[in-house]
Length: 118
Length: 420
Image (cartoon, rainbow over all chains, first blue to last red; front, side, top):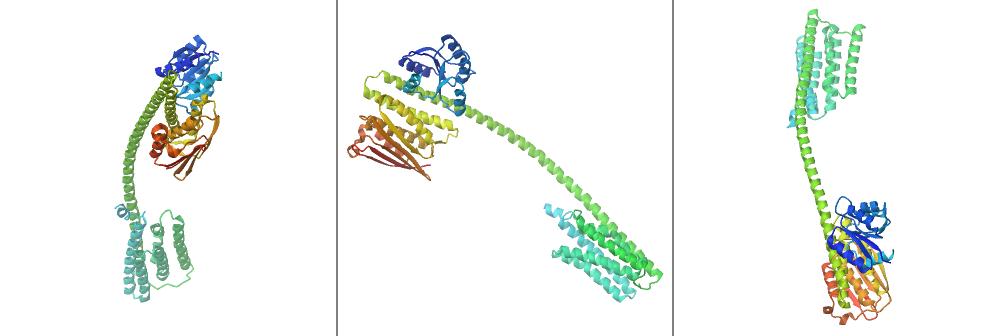
């Protein structure tokens, strides 16, 4: 079943690669944004099923804070993509509606496996 | 230099001994005058007793010279009490010999420090007892005394009164001057200490500021390091992603497999980088969690082969430095990838046994699979990059490797290396 995916990533190239992965899996990317505030707006507008969320974002908000805000009105599941998998962040992320906490670089097979759980 | 200056004060042990010596010399001189007087009056025996007393006083300085301080003090107390008692009884109460007893508190204070209150009290008590005995002997006329003319008694009284007064004033002035000088010295030292304290406070202030500056620089460096880490991770992710995407547009299976291998190599470096960053020390990482994670990703990348390959691990707690961890991770990646690619190529199931054991600083890495194996003796390294890399990484670890494989018997690889 086709899922609606929101990509939140501050690196343009990674955002593009993730978009390709999602499309190759046969899902739809509803939007790509680079900061937490835009992610909240996009989630309100598109009601995505899955959010590929980078932990470090442009602006004051990090990925986990953005997910906490999104969880107030959406049931979208987050796949966190991060270069920093320390225990504190993992703990914080588990408090949100999380599907997985992945360390970059994320492979196509890895994403495929995660999407198959939905 | 400080000790030399301090030695002139009674508050120090050396200063007190000096003061006692001076007291002994003065008293022996005074006693000598009495010897002359008693001789002139014709009291030979009593003059001799006084001579012995004078000699005792002087011998106290010799006792002090040879560090018999306690004996010297006892000698002073005994000889003063004896001389006062003896001559007071001999010459009569009116001769005023007992007047010397009034300076007993000063003698006690001369002999012992104010802190040694028990000893001062004891000495003072001895003098008091002597005074009471003299008083009772005279009151009840217990012992007879010499018959002296009134003029002689008056002469003795004047001498005793004058000498005891001189001794008393000498000791009082000595203590007073000594205290004043010592206080001045203490004030000077205090002033010096206060100046040093101010200087130290300035130094502490400067050091605190320097420390704060260092901490600020350290925090800046930490932030910078995090930023670099973030960039490196993103760049590795971009390279890995681009290689993977490229794979989707390649029809040639061989080329696709090569790209997949390259992507796995990038991933093994990226995971290693992540582990080092996670570790925070940036010097060493615990290899077990890294191996587990790497195995998970390699398994995942071959998940479309529909094989059931079990990887059995037995890994000791070993910490590797970055220079050791990087070649080891790439070597491990090559070994597992080779097994997936070649050993289990036409098999549905298989086992990989992987162990890493440590003894002191020596590490033994043992890799074994139960795949199809190959004739290692006839194998040409020019045909494959993987085998060349395994040898290169073994050399980089300065290790000794052994590679055994025969057709149908799997692969048995061992690498011995020493930790830095």
